[in-house]
Amino acid sequence: MRHPIFCLAVAMALCSCDRIANIGQAPQFSKATAMQGQAPPPDYPLPEGIKSSGGTASASLWNGTRKSLFGDRRADHRGDILTVVIQIDDSAQISNSTGRTRAGTDTMGIPSLFGIPQRVDTHLPPGANMANAVSTNSASSYQGNGTIQRNEKLTLRVAATVIEELPNGILRLAGTQEVRVNYELRDLTVTGYVRPEDITRQNEITYDKIAGARISYGGRGQITDVQQPRYGQQLADAILPF
Image 1: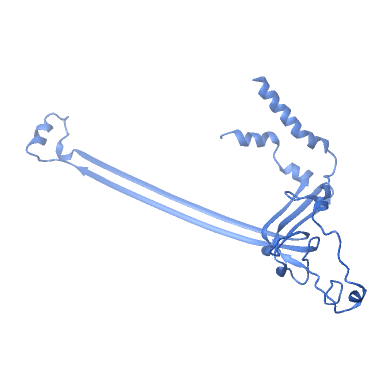
Image 2 (image 1 turned 90 degrees about the vertical axis):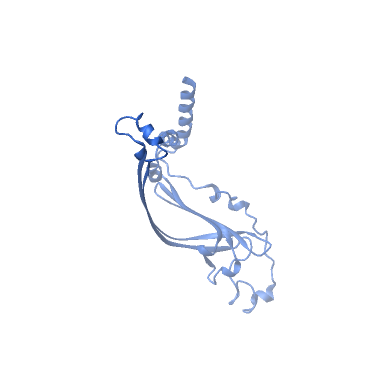
């Protein structure tokens, strides 16, 4: 019995080591702002170079480069940067009501059958007879009500990088942003797939045009740590059946 308790104590102590080591320190930024499930920016398949169009083409106002007066500055290649606009204002309200009632009465008797009931009555207890042999009553009632009400509002802007061009022209993007204020770090990550034609002339795209969007908004630090239950409480909530 001592060994499981000892192992549990050691495991809980190891889980707390990282938290104890960071006492009095501000949360550190992620290395190269790495994203969950994504490689950090230095490992992104960015282009090694950009082909030069020559001095004559770059000096004209009517060439097709991005630096020209009417050039298309929207992201469409690996390594390009665009702005993702996240404006979520959703609300949902669902209300259900169910009611059910049932009642039943059954009576069965054999008052006459070739004189057999009269002969059986002589062997039955006083007050019992075959004329009212069986009598049952049943009733059931059920009523249920359910209500769901949810409101979500989130307004954010984050710069993302095109990290892959699919064969059909779809762009895969990934962006991350971290802001540290005092001892609290706020981090925002977004990934997904977009069509180049959905990117506006301002080089922006809204979240509802991102396929397979994965948006994460959260934080870490002293305030977030205090809001989380302790490891012991989380373990108790997971294993206790009541």
